[in-house]
Length: 366
Image 1 (tube, one colour):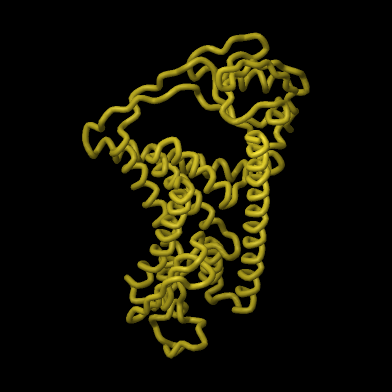
Image 2 (cartoon, rainbow, N blue to C red):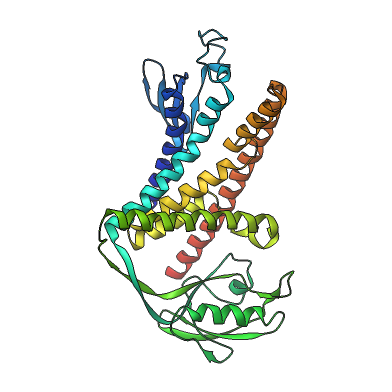
């Protein structure tokens, strides 16, 4: 059920994105003759007065169709309500509306979670730090550390209780590149000692490829009023947007170390399912985070994305005329092939990893 919930969240995010494009067009009187949630074979179809609405077999996608390039369209090619015949600003609103819709939706999800769950009041720390290897190729994973392990001590030094424990671990790892260090971990009710040799990054600091999370749980209180909810949601929204941009920046500047953390739809659904299994209210923050990521990815000036189309509009504004259709179509088709190829690669890779994990579990149960 949690897997279905995670898939439903992704479908809703895509629906929000496409609704942004659709409503921005219709509010300006621009023709939009198709609205689809999903790709592939049509499951449900409704023909409205101007638009055909469909739900298709594969929900992790969607599109809004315009009659501009539809050879069967009966609308005259010079009709001012065709998207291509509108001023640049009108077209920019339609193209960017999906991104704006995702950002607004993310903010509302954060506010809703604060209203339902409450406002974080304090964090009740426990000894140690919870760790998670970034991938199976990381130094930490190869040394035997697994997701959910708790580091209790490093190099014989017991970790303090509190957020300074994460700083201590980070400092010890960074200060010992190519040097063996010992960590004491707790896994369920057992404690073990592991030896790890951090790799040296380009800056000469040690890295082992783990994420650190303070060990403990937050306590919550009811919000004083709606104003407090919206204010805290704004702060959290800003933190997530800035953090997402920083993450993409690290992917560009430190590609080799961060490329393994790129996730496809299979892994995203898996993460969402795990969050839902722990607490269904986590789906709200999951939806906000993925919605922000979807918005920022789409605004990047890459072919086949909203940002790529906005880049064409910018060039048109600077040159005073659009680039030839042949060039635009070639760039878009190339970008679409690359994006589809990346998506298929991630799906195959992550499905294979999940298959291996299921086989390993089955062997343990035999």
